Image (cartoon, rainbow, N blue to C red; front, side, top):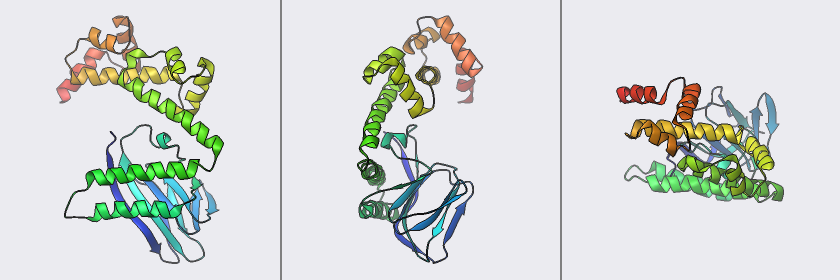
Length: 264
């Protein structure tokens, strides 16, 4: 279950006629804005004038610049941190670019509920806040994707890949490129093309990194032998496992364990 931390949130917020926001280095969190009325948004040096119900999801530390259009600015926004490595791909949402939704009132309603939960100082609403953010993301995904059948089909395919990736992280020893491709009902060649498109890396390179991360976790959190960890990561040869670990990380598994145990 992902951990979600809301840093700030508001709904139906009106700003002055000359409102202009500029954060050169963004924020150390995701920042979602729903422009209820038309706004001026600058992305990569290009100025865009939006229609009603435009949205943008900024990634952490990405430049943010937007402001009023024709003297009126009305928006909802939320700034949050989430520890899901496949967010926002899990919800099929574009990042750092404008997109439109067909029911802005629903987004405002959800953000109103989150705003109330965050503002209540007399009680903690951790689960309500988390559920609210997940509801927001799921609703955005539906409102954005449903308007484009081709995009919806690609989103559904991507969800199968993300679910596969989650399973790879849980049990990395089970997977080869062939079993991965079969799991999402694709040929190896088509699977490899889409994997690169979705995640920006080859399935083999990603699987190797997942295995390495899993090994590092076991090295620090358990007393299992190097041979046992090697087998749990899917390697038949302990020597090969040590060679790859050393090649990728710059030190052997045993050196990694000793170093991190000492740091604790």
